[in-house]
Image (cartoon, rainbow, N blue to C red; front, side, top):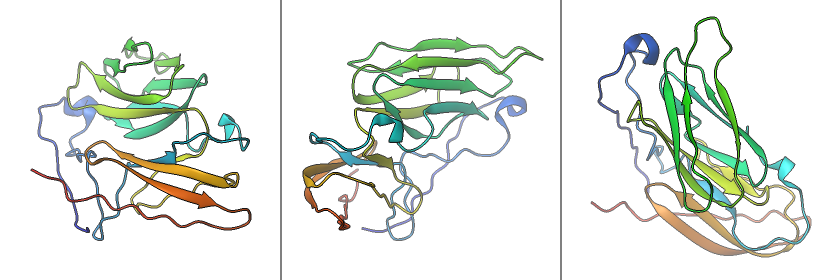
Length: 205
């Protein structure tokens, strides 16, 4: 079902480091026809062959900028280095909430005339990891740790495209932080494009 969703966060912040603009609540962003951003679509079933994790789309990094995690949702590969940057002129405390991976709890201190702080971490198990900042309570992001490259985060148009999937029958899953998960069984045939649409029911409450 379509409908525009736009909300702002209200809080007290230091405008010299975090900026004066209102921040958009990215937890539920949908376009005029229901195009859903920040959803993760991927193949949840086992894949034989295909591409390696180096083909995973997007940067393996989170950047703290104007006291916001960018991007809001990001992919990380199992066993691959993942970078967390602080581009703000202030202190951040990066803390993860996870079940299967070691907790990340990093203090990143801004030092004038020094390189911007960066920490590199590695995740060993696939899962969805919540990322918080204990200094700025509104900051939140999600890292999806995956075992193969057939995943994508949707943009503002709500579209996704998984390239070069080996032929077979798979379970395709979509995750969203507010709306939950949906699954569909799909058949991929060599040389053909399979079109799949997902529609979440309206959010209750």
